[in-house]
Image (cartoon, rainbow, N blue to C red; front, side, top):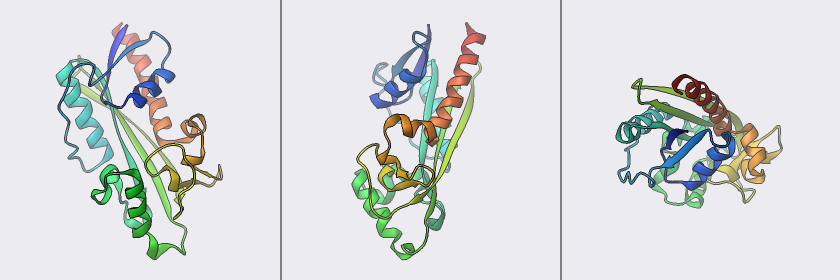
Length: 201
């Protein structure tokens, strides 16, 4: 079985990937499994740069095939903010604080449609080739200045999908995965992993 490091300590991400991959196709490890206790500093200016930084550094440390991701929200009227700072927007520590901060910053535009997109980039480090492949997904939506729904996390309660007439937080996990930026990027990454597995097995 091919070993794969998922460069996270978030068990939800491990579970999500396990649900997508065929049984017994990959043996998954997270950072805690391998006692990797350092955190890669996300100094990149783009989601792609940050995903590559994490995949490369954790991959070189573990010497395993490694998958990492970076994602966030880009609001058109805020010139792409919060962007790569989505998880630490305004220095706020909780999802509620970051959502409130975003709503506050968008008050001058409350009479307009506020277009935004979620972006996800997944990077895969291939140790034998010393190279990285990246896969991108994105979805367009509209920011509502009132939270709706209790599912998901982050900015999901504010991100409205017109075609679904729901925010991400009003969707169940299957609905969200079908259309989300992360779902798109993950589908491309998993297809590549299967192709790679055939080549190295």
